[in-house]
Amino acid sequence: MNEYARRGTGYELKGEYDLVTAADRASEALVVQQLRGAFPAHDIVAEEGSGHQTGAECVWYVDPLDGTTNFAHGFPVYNVTLALTQAGQLIAGVVYDPTRDEMFSAEKGAGAWLNGQRLRVSDASSIADSLVATGFPSRRRHQNVNVHFYYQLAMLSHGVRRAGSAALDLAYVAAGRLDAFWEFGLKPWDQAAGILLVEEAGGRTSDMRGALTELTSPHLLADNGALHAGILQLFAGIFRNEVEFPMVQISAPE
Image (cartoon, rainbow, N blue to C red):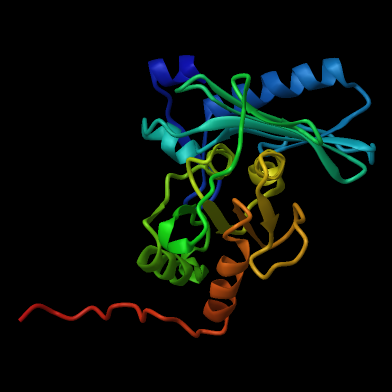
């Protein structure tokens, strides 16, 4: 990925807005090759489609370049992320940021780590004292309601960041750099490693209505645990269209 970033690479469109680059494909080919060599009996689910599924107990989820749009524009927020499930349970995950040489890793029951240093979520106890993050889909943006959630959190918190990499956002929650993250429509490979990182760092995850976290859930909330009940209560009101801060109406200047 660093080599492609140095020399530059063009991109193609998988959909109206969904980008893919040669770096995505090269990274996935390398990761899948290594996984197949090390774990031939395991299944692999990879974003660009080069994995294989046979119904094995152990399944790897691979995003070879999370943050492709950032990468294609030279915006240095992207990563490669992998996670392993056994019988449907997350047991290991990594998020590697090549621009900062930061390796976030987690193992079920063994904690979360950044370059060998133990991670712990933040101690923020209120939304008013928090810095949070979210993301927006590349496809069907006009149908996505997240702007309403974004606005309410932006009004209530220290701010909402939208950097364009769900895996790094989740890793940053685990590291205490962010206090919470939420998003609609994530794919399993986007979030699997990050979910385990947050939970192993002492945080909490669920869907945005408080249901059990599933890799196929329509939305995700991850935070330091102390904020979870308050954010869920806020989200419940937004889902009911009951908001504290009505969105500003645009009017023509006089």
